[in-house]
Image (cartoon, rainbow, N blue to C red; front, side):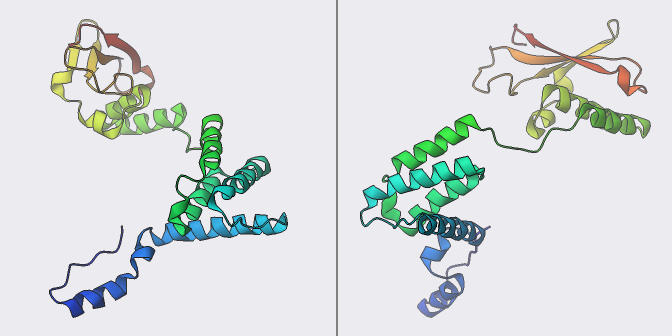
Amino acid sequence: MPKVVFEGSTQARRAQDRQKLGSLKQLTVQPSTRLRYEKALNKFLSFLKAEGLRLPSRREQLDTLVMEYIEHLWLSGEGRGLAADTLASLQDYDAKLRGHLPGAWRLVKTWVTHELPNRAPPVPELVLQSMVGWSLYNGHFAFATSLLLCFYRILRTGELLDVNRSRIEISAKLRTAVVSLKLTKDNDSAYEDDEPEATTEIEVMDVVDYTNVTLNSSVNRSGR
């Protein structure tokens, strides 16, 4: 969260508060971000020095050097975050560089297209089963059902909290419960009320044995 102060009632008080905050240039980015920028810029300058290259005197000539550096990062196994920080640091150092690095930004976009980010892996199904089993054993039936819905329908928190009694239809004869999900990743949020809703059918078996609780996804084309 950025540092903030209430505007002082006098010029002297405002000047005192602003001195504590620092210059406007320093406040344009967060301290942690500025530290990343400095590290990225220093690595870029070290690369130029190692290759016997110098910064050009004209802004439009810098793009070629930065493109060469990004290719170096790609081939040497560096993370794409360093490439993005390098471009951002250059533009932070010289705001007039915006629009003068089209080739470098194009390489970064190509990098993003061809290499997926290494995000945290999802919870394995075995871990889910353990969590559901613990929940059922301790009587937390709503929580167990929530885990199953979130896992098999890939629900976000807001989508799960949107599920209420009006969205659940239970058939005692078929031993199933159909859950209507209004807005999910599988059902574009741009749909109107007369468009199809995604539904999830839960087979209701022995609630104590969590391994017998299964989910099957379907789409109700009636929109209700």
